Length: 316
Length: 316
Picture 1 (cartoon, chains in turn purple, red):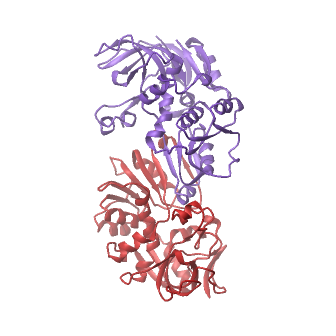
Picture 2 (cartoon, chains in turn purple, red; picture 1 turned 120 degrees about the vertical axis):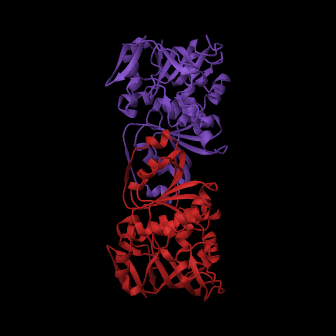
Picture 3 (tube, rainbow over the protein chains, first blue to last red; picture 1 turned 90 degrees about the vertical axis):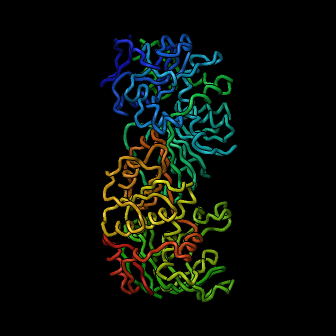
């Protein structure tokens, strides 16, 4: 089968089809999304070498175990836990110390004709959700994760730094939940998408006279945390969403003096994200910049790397 | 009156006696403690120039307003808020955006024969508390602050990084509250003090096979946060206590991936600290390395800077 492998460079190669082990399903990929994490992996993040890709929707072809899933359209949680540690037993496979992560750590990913995943990672996709929307379930779950981590008050003022795919999606989700959202970005076109939902948009982080109780850092680069520290009020919470390859130099005394809470946030549960899409509560059409055939992956990655691009989908 | 001023260098000078404004008290200092923050100020921290010192016990000499305090032995909260902003109204003068801070920011400090402070900052010291103990009320309140910020479960495992004055005091307080404390430091003598209370002591942070849900960083230098990140478990909380002059270079992806909570922590309320000392629940004798006459301040600071020294007190 064809797969996109990263080994020093990104290339399409022919590899043997995966076989499902016990309690695994073999899934034929229909569509997959390019995430910034994929682009960071190509820059060295996680030192991962293998098939990349972790946002997908596909159809179950084979199952080792329960056969009721065969033919079902599914999405899949990307963290594969051991199933027996204290994190897995609490439903937090995404923090299992011996986990593999689809297309990110020790597990071949979704930019391939077929993948395998444990059955318990799979979620059937309701018919009201299109393939294009289904690919967003993984990043949407990552946005909703913030609401699982901290108690966000109705009407709270929230600044989101970064108008990329993730920043926009976070702004849309917070807005959907009734927060007063200020989105800070550099791209007029991307900000305009947010403005349509009533999100306040800003092209500079210098425009604010009052500080925020919550700042979400989704800029995708090291300068975002420094900006977040300038926008946060005493005892406020900065949510760190960006993962990138490299280090940031930081004066931590501001964190101590203002008793700031800096909280990392990563993957979330799929259920709530599926529900928002199933009931048409979140609209994602404008976040899609292109749907590109899998074989045209070079063009797809070129497009994904452009400053004005949002989500690029690979169609199989 | 005599005062220790930092202006490029530390020197004892003669300055006019402070006069109390409305609602202020004039306090004659009996004893004052040298804190690491004082030493960091001499290295450039906060860019403060003036009379340093913020840990003290003294006797009220004059009051502009309520005279019932005259002759009382008092300690004082170091943050002087505006009294009318939303932080002050919530009893959080320590986060007032226009606050002055005794001996740290825009307010002459306690290494002087007399100081002024607003009456509402003062706490009478019960007779069962000695002068030596009273000087510890400010740093002890800063330790107890952690318990105001996060919910700490009985019996929780806590690592404390740093066996300096603050690290030791934090370890002792967590131990007092029933936590399982591991103190990591470099100084055999200091660690031995903690060991007597049943605190586990370690001379290397490499000795741990399991990770901690809570790590307190009180090392006083930039390497402490990197060490803390190596010791914390997924979804754990790192309490940042160290303030120092300079920046730290950090790979923040660990914070994001493991959803770590990095929480700054500074000053606390005096009431609970006074209560612990009043009822002899905390013993501090071994944390005192020397009591030095005020005029011998050069000797006192030399002693305070030595690696094996704990608290140095200035006696007036």
